[in-house]
Amino acid sequence: MPHNKLNISGAHANVLSWVTHGLDHEEEAMLRNVSRLPCIFKHVALMPDAHLGKGSMVGSVIATKDAVIPATVGVDIGCGMMAVKTPFKSGILDRKMAEFRHEIERAIPTGFNAYKESVDEASRWDGWETFGDLHPKIQDRKRKSMVQLGTLGGGNHFIEVCLDTEDNVWLMLHSGSRNIGKELAERHIATAKTLHRLNELPSPDLAYFIQGTDEFVAYWHDLDWAQKYAMKNREVMMTRLLKSFNRMFTNQTAFRPEITVNCHHNYVGVEEHFGETVYVTRKGAINAEDGRYGIIPGSMGAKSFIIKGLGNPESFNSCSHGAGRKMSRTKAKAKYTIDDLKKQTMGVECRKDKGVVDEIPGAYKDIEEVMRAQSDLVEVVAELKQVICVKG
Image (cartoon, rainbow, N blue to C red):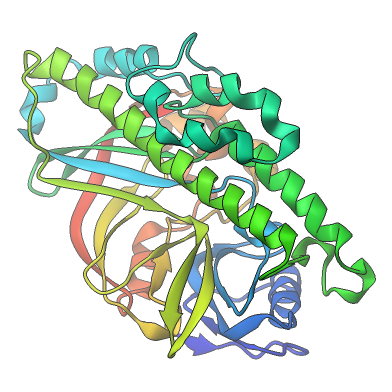
């Protein structure tokens, strides 16, 4: 579906939207606020999974000139996905799915949990060499960030075993920069607010750093570090997931993955668009430049998609990062029961308790509709359906 230009009263920059539903007053107000920032470049691109966030819509792509807006990046810096295609068919999993789910939960800490000591290559990560250059108020967090490197977290983060339409087994996970990314983000967001007269901004949550200032340099350093931490976090988890998989199913024989994808969907990149160098903030969106692999997951009972980007310039070479929530966690908990969760996750080996009711598929948009809405942004490489899902 081609995009359309939204008619939002009071907006300064255009908003190009791939969303298929009408926006409510609060969503329009959030887009209007972003559009009125002086650093906005060209237009705001709204992906088909968009929904309310803090300061700006989750599912928005915001290009800026000579400035970065830390709250628009959000607090889970570098959150994203990783997937590996194995050479095995579904038969390898027969009668062992519950056992493998519990093995994953033993191998990889979830929620607020961490390792007792750093694991695998986590302790040798070269990012530790520059930890001392990060924000001074997080210097007592090094040990915590070391033992959390390679852990899942909670919320909508997950580890899954999936099957594609040709019966191939895929391993997939979703996580970000854990507590250290949140700590860094919150401190820099607070700093940004001290640099502006907040009543002169469209929203206090849109305080920004101007390129060349000391505050910008400090934020950019910490942002880059946290994005690399998030990427490494997924790599360490995937290493452990593969070890567990090989131990249980392949007699510890390592295999060469047929496809490996690791992509951010909450981050900033320096890119060329419309002939200019700009900062592109993807808040709940992935880089879909021509030929680039990406991952678009559904909910814990729906399909997910491995894609290649088509490089649509109007979206700043971007696409959606998932199905997107259609109701808040609070509303989902009020509406749905454990029985509803069991029905909607039938056939998936996963937790089915009140702790994950807010992640029920019914709380998310229809991933099929989201994919139809961005046929001009991506091509589908593989369609996946999970058979095992681990939640924090």
